[in-house]
Length: 404
Length: 93
Image (cartoon, rainbow over all chains, first blue to last red; front, side, top):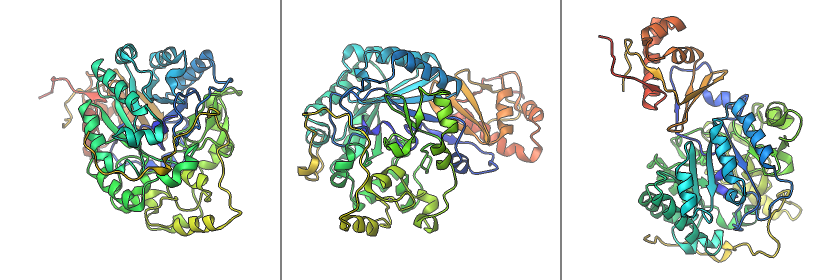
């Protein structure tokens, strides 16, 4: 899947908390969970023409038991009843589903707005015009570098050209302000100004999200995640640019000082979740693993029952009571960070985030690295295509700034 | 922009309200902005704003006392800025 298609609050829209003061801070309300998600990520298919080395869903092959068109419509009917105002559609490459347009049209026709993530390969001139003609639809084109060299090292040969061509088509079709979505890595973090300029040149909005060690990212996170110095630069860069969207995914950086705008908390199973192509419901897009599987929309009671009755989600909505982070002075700012990142590097969920900006995870990570018996959890499934090579970012060196 | 007691704002027809413990979520399908109405009384006020009712009347209906009205007016101004409410000319003198 395009790795940026979800985040703690996937694609969080501009949020304007309203006075007068509430009886309980909103963040506490969200931590207790709502009766329905604010929004959710829905991977429509595991099929993908790319094999990105950080793919959260290890996508490639279509799962033969993916939800049928009718089952997708039924899920949308439920989301409409629950007043889930929008979904982030991803994959895999969602446009590989032959019923992609009927599903999108059904959703927007039933008061469920759509934001969808694509690698752009199938956004030709005709598709761009069709997308531009629809209301309540946002498009995010995934691009992980301002140059083909940096992008294709992660997303595969030709991926940069395909994304640029898709954005050309969207601009030509008069789509308006689509999103250009970038997963921040050690290799593209120096290109953020160029990426911002590129988005501006299309009249698009730049969206940057955090790399997670999930899916195939479990194998590449070590080489790709930004260094501590880069994290500090990124924090300052984001503080100065409130027009850059983040899906609220960098809340762990808020421990560096003033909070970044948005919901600074992990919404997994509380205000967001993930529906995968076969209808499995996970706590968030970054934890496609049996330990975070809450149920399936095909079960009795459908999605609503999974959201409201699953034991997993009930446990995620309980107050945090233990762990090193709770006593840290920055806990209110970062809330202990990202559950998925901790899980897939082999930390406990009460441990600090592996990218804790105060360095609190470093002794634990060093201990894990030194322990021959320590095995980090592996993703529970792999839809990669046998024989198709995954780009290896290992040989890439950090780049200098390049004009676009 | 500011909102005054005599104004007759209207809840934008493209906005959906979802009731919550704390108040409501408000989503504008046109500009795709999500707002949080952080008090049930604010939801009552917003729901009664139909373009004919004044803010003053809406406050009375919802039982918003005098001391809370400045905060509520600021909230309505923010909701107007995000397109949740629209204010037509028609200002009472």
